[in-house]
Image 1: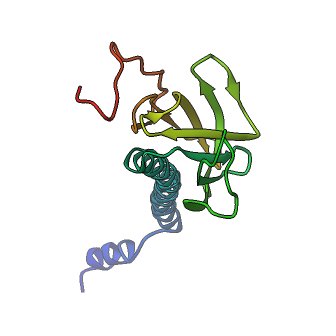
Image 2: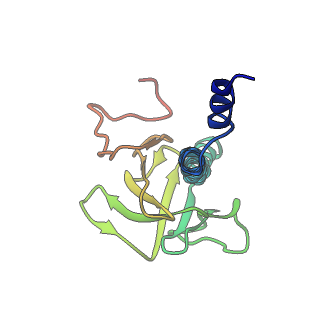
Length: 186
């Protein structure tokens, strides 16, 4: 047997401990990055699902008010995230035992601020939005934060329409050049 071959074979038998540690470190970093991306994606989806459900409730209330020619109230508990739709009985009163749409809740986000057309801002308490036969009674801007306070979404209800706008970027109030109604063509 050739002695040069035996020396070469003994040097190439396997990996050193340092090489194994480096490979394991690289693999664990890659797995960690994938897990962080999956968790971030899941949290983003939860926020978007919450906001989509809230926006859908607002749209249904506004459209139902137009179709039924009645006024519906969307009652929102800002701090708790509960919202329910009721038919207006008289002068803003509603029957709490008979909601048009059952109470929903924001599970994965909360309402940070609510801005009104007159420049006022609300951070807590109860908000009542009026969906009338001609659309929303007033324009309102909502700012939402996810449960980790690092993702923000925005929603706007536009006056005299049944429209809601959802965005990842801050929204401003919509001021049409002429009065728009859901009942007349644009």
